[in-house]
Amino acid sequence: MDKSTSILLVLGDSNLIRRVVEECERDEGLQVVGVARELAEAVQMAVTSSPEVIVVGDCSDAGWVEVCNFVRLASAASWIIAFFDHEPDRQTIDTAMLLGARQVLAGDEGLGCLRQVINHLLRLEGSQVSEEYVRATDPQRFPRIISICGAKGGVGKTTIAVNLAVALAAKNVGDVAIWDAYSQFGDVANIMGLEAPRFLAELAEFKNEEVDEDFIGNYIVHHDSGADAVITSHAPLPSGTFSQQLTDKVVATLRRRYRFIVVDTPPMIDTLSSSVFARCWRLLLITTLRDVTSLTDMMKLIQMLEGRYVRGGGIEIVANCVVKGDAVRKKEIELLTSKNVAICIPEDPAIRQANNLGKPLCQSDSRSPAAKAIIELSDEIVNAASIVAPNAAWRTE
Image (cartoon, rainbow, N blue to C red):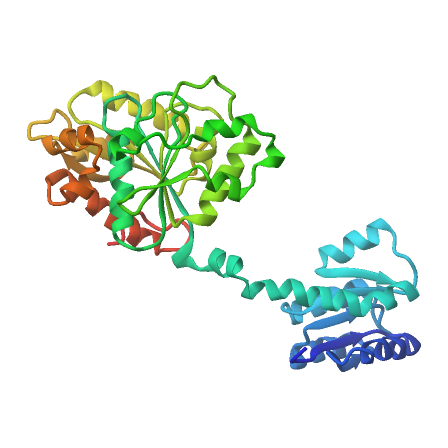
């Protein structure tokens, strides 16, 4: 070790103190920086020396429970090891753990394990510099699942999902995936012009223990827009094809690999969709403003999902194919649903042409009216994703 690990002993038995010191001195990477026999002394030394490890037992004027609690409060960053002269019972171990002890040791056997336990704790703390830990704790790299859904077919949710993924990929703010979570009649591959991609449905044929992250990675297809695509099926699947364990593995794999995961999600509750709804950072519900039935169906979907499947505050509305003279206005939707309308996407003939050619509009004609609106939506998503405070607002103004 390049740096010695500092250890504070809080023990009332002089013989035990001597033996613990001798044991620590056998490892040049461990250094006893203080010995306290009384409660007040233990707290003061914990504050002034900020040791990495505190070995706690009974003191001359206080029992180990009080000592353990006080030093935990005085030096929260220290690892506490509770040490007993006899084998503790289950209740004692549970109490020590509740008081913050990282390990409970006893007698000669425990003394012989002390150095091993401390070095094991060091290795655990060393995970802080691992790439996976750094990625998981970097707010600018937090994975964000964006579920795109709609109560009715034909409102343009797949088109918006694909183009949103393409727009996000063009910003170079992290890797982006579009997941077609439809187990029946998904259209992401057609809109992206992907020829015969591999389908997640094939994974259902394997045992769960055979499916790992690398295995799932074989079913990810790269698109020339920069976004990757994951397609669930090319043919209707029976309900229950995907187990919860397999679905969780797919979600975990995508979260480890991508900054933004846009999911074209069916408006039904099955294993796939419920997992997406439960984990999504934002749920964008797509609707049109031309008829009341689209809005009433959307409100029913909100009532079904909110609270039970989607956490509060995570639902936004996207008004699609908006034209002058629509029967319903943005403000009216917000009043009816108590949800923010994230963006109004104008009706644009270029969308149909792009879909027919298998070339996402945000890639083939980024200056078209609909593409501009979706790109604006992607800007808002990137800005909102940088806000890490709890319950942060969707919009950043």
